[in-house]
Amino acid sequence: MALEPDRWSRWLLERRDAGDERQRSAILDGLAPIRERVLTHAEPLDGATLLDVGTGDGLIGLAALERVGGGGTVIFSDISDALLGHVHAAVARRGLLDRAQFVSTGAEDLAEIPDGSVDIVTTRSVLAYVSERSRALEAMWRVLRPRGRISLFEPINSLMFPEPQDRFWGYDVGAVTELADKVKASYGGLSEPASAAMLDFDDRDLVALAEAAGFTRIHLELHVDVEAGASLDAIGIDALLDSAPNPLAPTARESIAAALTPAEQERFVAGLRRAVQEGDRLRRSAVAYLVASKPG
Ligand SMILES: C[S@@+](CC[C@H](N)C(=O)[O-])C[C@H]1O[C@@H](n2cnc3c(N)ncnc32)[C@H](O)[C@@H]1O
Image (cartoon, rainbow, N blue to C red; front, side):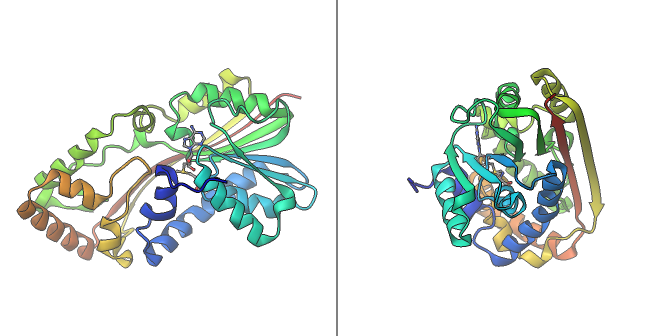
């Protein structure tokens, strides 16, 4: 299996946490309850054939392997061969290759997956990067057996973005707000379709897409949180600066370098460092969990 890194594997395996152990464990701590909820919504899993679409580094699929048991199968699918190779190695280390398949295919058509061949489709934070989401929901419907179900999680960025003007990473950067504006504006360069897709849907669109694809018994949970005091202080500002918020975005340090003069960069990073130390942070997030069934 080809292991050439691509932007998806670079982000998941390097740029998301900048190689920093504290950052990595903070991210995994945040993802664990999401993984649990996606899999709990997909129950019962014992003996099932489960397709994890856009499996990435295997957050959902590797945990599903345990739960489908010896009589079940997990199909790890992604457009990144580098990530499929990474997950293949992880499954091999667990000695569970006999209950796993690896399929290189896009969420838009799941072309390599036969009609009516799986019991459950899971996906986390993948549709946000897919412009043709209606095709993706139709493809999920196609590959499911009658009474099959989907369990999805997606960030609803359109409800929380852009963050308030005086905030950066959620911190009050009042003294350097005009520099923060310039840095945030440099993200405006992200105009390719997959970047636009991150912002052009909300929870109601997900329900409408599932309904239009033919699913019945659709249930969506929207979680909107604004939480004061959720500081990132323990991670360390350098790891934060060298991390990218998503696979299509530059790291904060890259954005700062692109947007500011060297003197402004120094002033901005000093202001940000002060803000992180003071710890006045507002965490803002909106996410949706969707479960839907195909009729029998
Ligand atoms: C944010 S990561 C999420 C990975 C994993 N689902 C998780 O929960 O950690 C997005 C994943 O979607 C994959 N992806 C992006 N566009 C895709 C597409 N059109 N079809 C299938 N997978 C895609 C990427 O390769 C990457 O693995």
